[in-house]
Every structure is written in C-alpha cells, then in structure tokens.
Image (cartoon, rainbow, N blue to C red):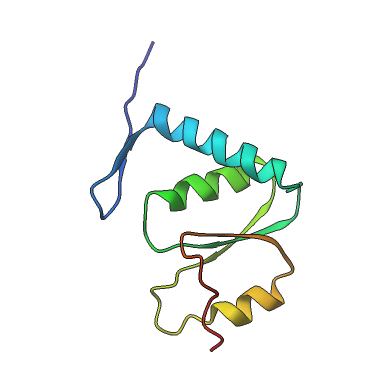
Length: 102
C-alpha cells in the first residue's frame, strides 16, 4: 500500500494534510448541500489565495456544481458585474462585506 501525505500551505502558514483536506471538503460540501446546492448550479468563490480556496473549489466540484472563481486581489476585478451576470446560487467568501460596485 502506498501512503502519500500531501500538504497544502497558504500564505498565512496554515497547512492541511491530504486527510484533513478530505475532511474539510466533505464538511464544506455537506454545508453547501444543506443550503440546497444541486448539480449544475453556479457557485461564486470570492476568495484570495488562501487555504479555503481549494477546499471550496473541491467541495463545489464534489457536488457537480459549477465554480465561478473571482480573485479579489486582481486590480481589474469587477466582482459586482460578475456576480450579477453569472446566475449564481450561492457566494462563498471570507469577507462579509458586499463586493465593490465597480
């Protein structure tokens, strides 16, 4: 048996092993499913480069939904425009404030 330990690091120094990643993805997918997310629906992931980004992305994929990633650190990013034209079911973010209306 091959045992592999994958670690994901973020800029804040946090790390997940593969096993921890699987647990976090499962928990996130369960939460999204409980919100009513279904196959083919769109989920906006508005996160900077952090450890939650791959968790959210994989959770959405696990449910067969569609990711609409927006990186808020991109200077020409217009999240408000993307949010209104993407027919989103849910927004995943670490910022409780509304996106800029630029």
